[in-house]
Length: 373
Ligand SMILES: *Cc1c(COP(=O)(O)O)cnc(C)c1O
Image (cartoon, protein in one colour):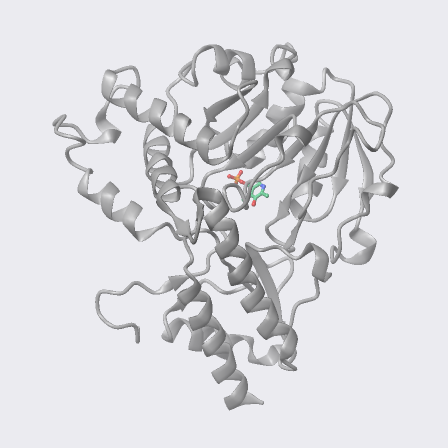
C-alpha cells in the first residue's frame, strides 16, 4: 500500500461500498456504549426507548434529506433490492398487469421475478442497443390496465441513469411509477410528483447491507396478495412503524449516522442532497471528461444517460487489464474491476467518494496510459 500511514485507500466498490469515514469512526466509538446507555446499538431491544429515538431520528432525517412528502410512508425493511423484486408485485400488482422498462441487468431481473406474481410485461428494452442508451419514453408501449410501471433509475452494472424521471401522466398513463433507486438514492433529489414507490438497499449509498428502504405513497398500501408474507406486507409494516418484526437495527443506526453526515454537507449555498448532487456532477464530469479525451480508455454509454454513480470503462487494449488493476491496488485504488457480465473496469463514485479520490484515479489512469501507450 503506497498510501501514507493513517489514510485509507480509495474504494470504488459498487456495493457494499465505501462509507464516509466520519460515520465509521462514530459507529466504532459507539460500539460498546451508545450515548451512555451501557449498551451497544446491536444489543438493544428494538422496542426500547433508546432504539426508538434512533429510528425516529433516522426516519425524520431521511424525510428531510429527500424532501419526502407527508402522503408517503418511509419503511425500514429487510431483504434487499432483490427481495423487493417480489415484494413490490405482491403488494401492488393485484395479480394483474405490471409494466417494466428493461434498461440493464437490474430491471431485467425485476421483470423476471415479477412474472411469478403477475403479468409482468416488457414495454421497452434497450437490449438491442447493448444497454448503451435508455429506451425513449415516447416509444414505451404502456398497458392501459397496468397496476404500476417499473424502472431502474440507476443501472449499477451497465452505468445508465435517468436524469429525469418519466412523467407517466403526460404519457397518458394513470399507473404509479416504481423506481429501484438502490444505487443512486441520496445522490440527487427525487421528483415525488412522478413516483408512487421507490425502493433501495442501503449498501450502495447509505450504510451497511441488510437495510432496505421503501418509500411508498399512502394510497398504494393495503392491496397485497393473500400469499404475501406479513413481514413483507407494506401496510402491516407501515401500521407498525417498521417494527412488525425486528428491523435491521444496526443498519438503521448506521444509515442514520449517514443521514446526519449528509445533512451537514455544504457546497456554497447548497446543503444536504443538493450539495451532494453538485459534488457528484463535478466528480462524474471530471472522470468522463478524462475518459472521453483519452485514446487509451473508453466509456460506451450514450452521454445523456451516463450514470453519475457507476462509471464502467474499458482499456482499448484489454490485455492490459490485469496490469491496470494490480497497479491501481498498489496506488491505493481498490475494487475497480468491472462486473463479470460487462467486463472491463467500473469506478463507483457514490456520495462517500470525495473529489480527491476521483482525482487520484484520473492521475493513476493518466500515468498508466503514459507508461503503456
Ligand atoms: C445492488 C442492487 C440491487 C440488489 O440488491 P440486493 O441487496 O443484493 O438484493 C438491486 N437493484 C439495484 C439497482 C442494485 O444496484
